[in-house]
Length: 276
Figure 1 (cartoon, rainbow, N blue to C red):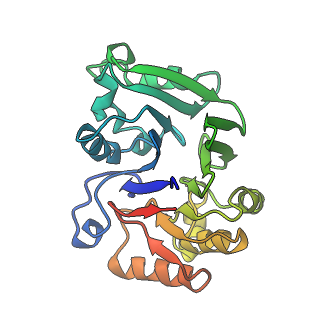
Figure 2 (figure 1 turned 120 degrees about the horizontal axis):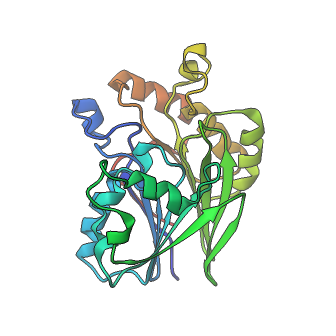
Figure 3 (figure 1 turned 180 degrees about the vertical axis):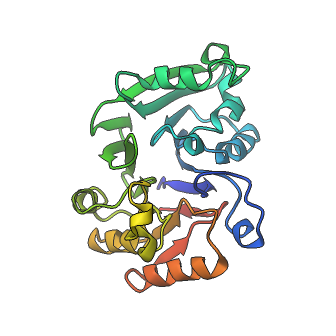
């Protein structure tokens, strides 16, 4: 029986390179998550964690196809893409999915990201066979007859996409960079229904989430993630997209808040894997 093989390659929010002993326990890289299924590879976001993923892929047989789903275009979710060296391999087949930004397609946005003088390379130098798919609304993408990915648009500065991957045997929801609100939460409860795992934006504690100081920052809390996991009858929750300002006591507060609502909760750590 083929299963979904999940691995967390980057779990930090905002910026990579955390050096405090507390943060080093969780990782130094920004958002990147992979899911392997048979000979297909699905990646959620291209933060600096995708560089480690490239090293892993280069040491094994290449997947039949790589599907990269970008949640949104803030730097911490795309800054690793120029260093994902598989894009320079002509044997690689890859599709990059991302939401439309105003009138710009995903390819238009990434062209700007690689624009001179900010990058010495551009998309035209990438030798892999790359297709671009722009997401205009909530959609379903059929990877093969046993694997599909669904998207849902949530509140965040300039918007963000969250994703759900389903196989014939399991499901995983990726919810990064989401400003909690009751309407999206209710819709996400249906979106995540009975999933095997939820990876959730837990940038804030519950007190921070409700502070006017952080209103409009575009994030949610550990407790709201736990509530979502409970209400959606999901099996496991990973608290993800950690604040680089979080102390050891702060992390203890997050996990305590979450487990009081949904006991099967973990703080996301770089290198964590799960098979469902």
